[in-house]
Image (cartoon, rainbow, N blue to C red; front, side, top):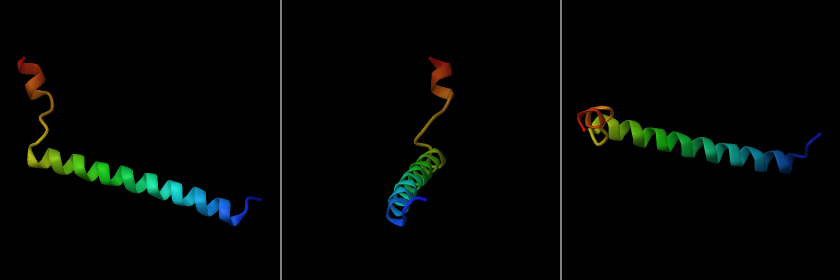
Length: 46
């Protein structure tokens, strides 16, 4: 069975990655809502 210290390290790594993905997702959605990103419209007109 794995030791508790190893599991704490693995859990911390997973938590850090999860928070980074959540933060990135929030930033992209916020940018999309604010109109900073234009999807498909500019690419189709060129």
